[in-house]
Image (cartoon, rainbow, N blue to C red; front, side, top):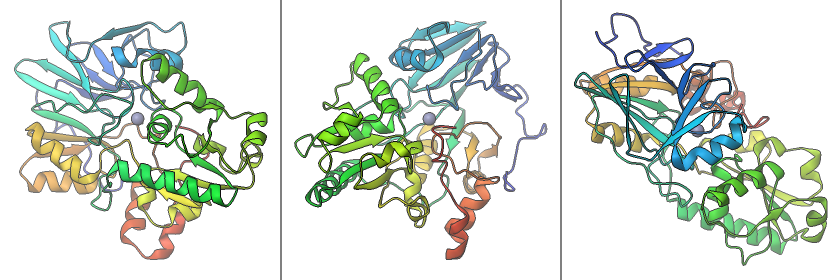
Length: 376
Ligand SMILES: [Zn+2]
């Protein structure tokens, strides 16, 4: 992965609590997987995004707050056990607990303790305020397996309440021009976070079917959100030029979107931090809003965790691993199949991101967002 130091046997701690296997991250002592990408007997799921929650396992364990969302994704037949955040479970003598990750509703970090060691698997996480899920909890540990989606200094996020104001202002400006506003945001998490920040007095709020279904699940889980209706042909005609429509990125340039014409389109994503990406996707506006940790908060979280060993699971890992080693920590990257909902759609994502950030303007043309399918 782009020259990132990957795991080798000599780097592995002598008695690791978690190992990297072809089926995913595995705790041998407890005999369970975390976010396995193949069917396994026991799978602890950090959150319901499709790159972390795969079908086919015999039993799942999730944070209680995330069960309804996970059930929606995994189907009625899935066997899902749930525990409260902070509640402890003993699996073959290994202490396991789940702690809020602040990523999406029900998202959890997995704390694993045995033999005097504490390991934490972060899953996806963020430190920013988000009214649609529990706030990230700092969990002290010896080894921190962290996501690294935005592991470069260029990725830093602004105040999310200012982003919400920008979205509302954009909506008002479009309305004055009698244009519908179509805002592209992933249907699980980002869409509800955006919805929570909308000023419903500006006009009607419509939701694409996929967003509407997931928003209902959020409401059933007790999350209060502004009123919004399903974006049907009738509502498109009725509210043309006034509504804001939240749709998944896959709806961009679709026949579905055209029924709202004339419209202005916007994308809410951390990747909008890179100039050129919005233009490449043909959107009129980019709003820098991510459900992942930005680079300064990533470093801060590692510092605060007290971890002596830092394992980066995916994304742009080189800079983080190098920095951790300079700071005297043991650090390496492992390749995972995570990274769907805000990933770059390329053969070598990390390399292209690096060249786009550090290279000349024309290399930015090689980048395209994985916006053609939702959470691939
Ligand atoms: Zn995620």
